[in-house]
Length: 179
Image 1 (cartoon, one colour):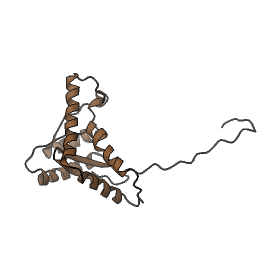
Image 2: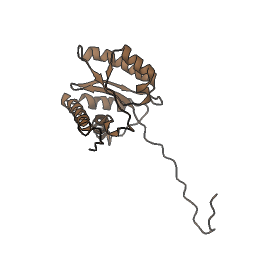
Image 3: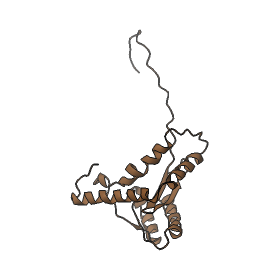
Image 4: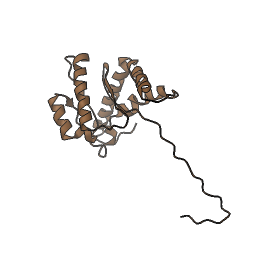
């Protein structure tokens, strides 16, 4: 309870505004371009089972689009990525991953290309589009269209930036790199 003078104006009550809906997705790409995109249904979270299912789909996609090429996956150290169940599945699927240190020890080694390079550009593309959201299909179609419309050089630049960033970290003996 709040005590105020009788002549004080009553406090303003603010109405809660629903936050914008988000469309979550997992994306895999390499120097040649987009390999696989998988969208998460509203209300679901990424857990180990979901992540493993994504890797199974990715493995099939690799066979079709990258045939005999070896790939190394880089993902962060979120719990679904590091669980025993996920690690066993990655081993069974013969998918190699690049070891990734914990963020709290080395925040500068976070997958930089994702947060700085890969997501902001389509976000800018979608800015100003108004969707009547009954389901997320319109947004998903536009996101897919944007990524598919990029030249392979766009994705190659993202990988090069990642390599450059890792090299900086190594050259500085693990000292924090800020760009």
